[in-house]
Amino acid sequence: MAQKNHRLCISCRQTAHRDTLWRIVRTFPSRHVSLNDGMGRSAYLCRNPQCLENAQKKNRLGKALRSPVPPEIYKELHNLLIQRSSEQTDLSSISSK
Ligand SMILES: [Zn+2]
Image (cartoon, rainbow, N blue to C red; front, side):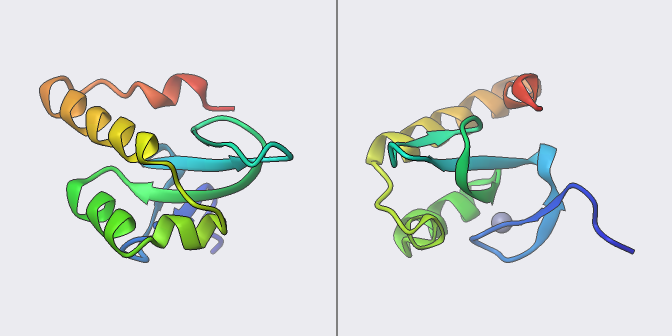
């Protein structure tokens, strides 16, 4: 049974449905790192503080994307976490393709 639409979290190495994960993309060819949209090498991360912290501390995100991840990306993810804890609506699922 293939795990359709499931992706591996680059931090804890567990799979989850892609809608429940953050997608971080190193867009091609600009090498700009962005969240959720863009074509290019992408990495997935659980939307929880532990995985975010590990991804940042151990540079798992940078390794997965083979590119340095700007601090703004981590800041944005932290902000999203804070938003999510106050309201349970899923902002990023709006742009699912
Ligand atoms: Zn995880």
